[in-house]
Image 1 (cartoon, rainbow, N blue to C red):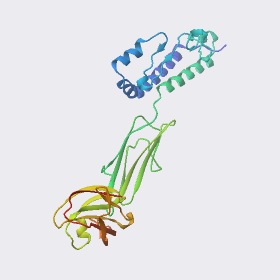
Image 2 (image 1 turned 30 degrees about the vertical axis):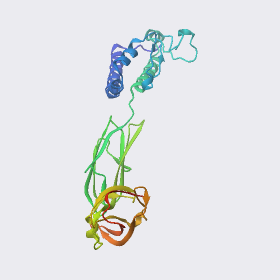
Image 3 (image 1 turned 90 degrees about the horizontal axis):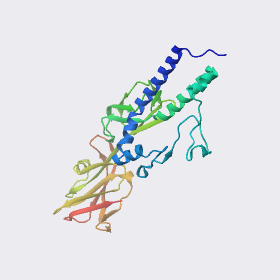
Image 4 (image 1 turned 180 degrees about the horizontal axis):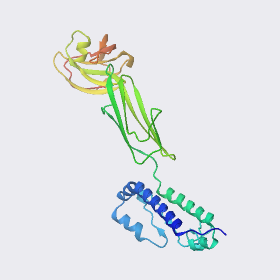
Length: 306
């Protein structure tokens, strides 16, 4: 016959289980608050007032109706003991005590601990992942001297990596220097059960320029006086007011290809006037094509480029 539990063993087990429940409840508080915030007062009342071993469903939120039973004869479902589809039963404490089987009692404790942990488990999530400076698009030729990343998780994690480099699990920031090319920084973390990821992409692009000007010498200085938008393609739409002896100009990297101009539903109206080696304000040089409207004094005009 095995030795029964002493009072101290019982108290220790109880304290351990209570501590586990408190920890899981603390982790799950934010999730519970988020769940309750989406319910109206009437919906909350419906959930707690509709008894009879069942809860009402909330169709608006996709919450299903549930059926439950209490007592030592397992979870029976609808129709009480007549329910035969499935069920889970655990002997009550006094029944286990009568067996004098410490191993059986430990097994029940382990099973219940596992069930409670699953009920209260919160999956790992990256609450925020930001960078300083916060902008993520730069002009080609620029260099980011220092880029600092900061992040927050919804819970403690066991392992984490930034760009596939493992970091101490307590670290919540990292700094990179001298960045001048496109980069994606990927954060990955796990609690040993679920993995969460988040990414920030830093990109470098050259300008797409448009504006109104008189005919002149087509060089870098001319283009830099136009309106700049950092872009990776020729496609765009813009509106300008074009007065007397003024033309609409559009300048893009040659690599963007030949643009198609549409004004007022009609295609055309622009022609290539120059191809130059353009140096932008960050001292980056590449070939550019400059296009000019065939007519001046067009007034308020919207141009679609594709």
